[in-house]
Length: 303
Image (cartoon, rainbow, N blue to C red; front, top):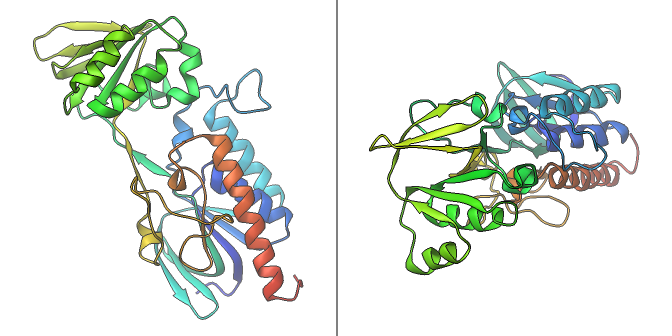
């Protein structure tokens, strides 16, 4: 057991976890962040909609800058994986890699795991090189007047294709599972969006585009393919402590980002389906402030 008793242990080193660490460090709280290195931000080559960066910033650069900022305010950041969290008399006992920690509060910011396609030719590097995209809200603007495909479950693909229609006239829905119903088909036709229901057999990355090859060998060329396959929030640790989830599988939190489990907070994609860095940072600021106030009240406002 680590002899020091933490004010907060943060699970996850993405924008939400790092923003919480920055706030807690500036509140002069003893915080430790455990980072398994699974932040989706590592895939983003250019972030153009995060306020304050008119000339863009990459995901890895943003994470690196936030990492440095948190450390400057005294927060310890360790690489590792949290395997278990148990409640104790004075908070929580956290098992991470080969160590154990005591903490008055825990903030879960472990994000989501994207459902990625299992077809020949696909690799995560296609996401890094902007041939495959995950978030129309983030970067639809960058594909104005480009040729776009939306590939995934039928209902989700329809919604994302219609969202992207504001950016391009050339959009195709590639149905990976399910069926496009008559009413949705009519909406897509009215918007000039093509529907292809022949399953994809493989992807081929071209110099400035990507080709989707179906089971019949026909290749269709696109400037990018958006995945509409959903994601799985990493809620296991929180749920085992009594936290609750909504229909989408995201953690339910109150106005202070506290879950149904007392002293357990959460922030970022794991609690909201609008997966945006600005939203994650806002969650983190709220959660960190609530944690600071909670500890101050418990200790009579002493450090």
